[in-house]
Length: 260
Image 1 (tube, rainbow, N blue to C red):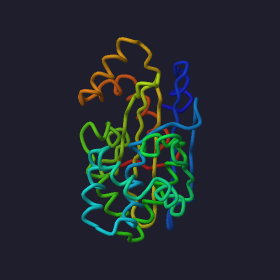
Image 2 (tube, rainbow, N blue to C red):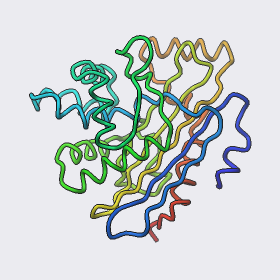
Image 3 (tube, rainbow, N blue to C red):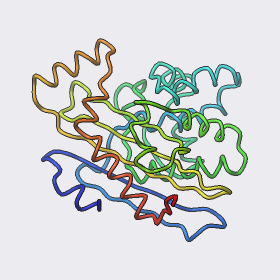
Image 4 (cartoon, rainbow, N blue to C red):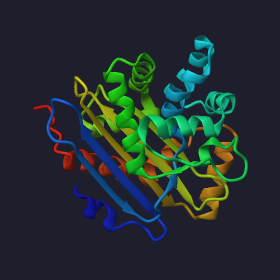
């Protein structure tokens, strides 16, 4: 399904973004795709966790300590372990390092700097950052390679059906979902790094914020979040088909060749 079909029926107040990058030496010409409807920037904390883990390694001398927090931050999206890295290194240091490595500029959140999830980003920026991560790993950087390996271990509900949608069982993925008490939308997002070989990289990103305004449903949702119960089913109902459709359309626009 094309982008215009996917975005045509968005509800009032909804936002959706998708972006993709295909580039690398020895491959076809570099190509980038992006589309946006609604807000220019969204919160998508979980998509940034592998990037935080990647750059934090250089600032934590104890490699075992870094791994102890970085691996669960990526594989099971542990907020507690992400926060440990975020505070140990410092928000400005982490975001400045991401800029130095990827060229992407992100600002620390306003107010409480401990809220790593409040950094607002655009899908094309996320794609650019992950393309840099993938090519750094391909060039032999062990930390980048380890982070991508952890992304390949993301499974089950944490993968949100991204690999199946993209017909890429070996892809590294990171997904996330949340609806804060002060927000009227449920945010659902995903990034996939597809294996290409050599220094080539293909990255696709989907980000959505779908209205979730029924007071009763929101109350039940927040109660489940407070109790630590899963809410993936609500995000699947509200945004799953759209999110995977955006990622697949992006990959198609990049000229990706699917296995025969």
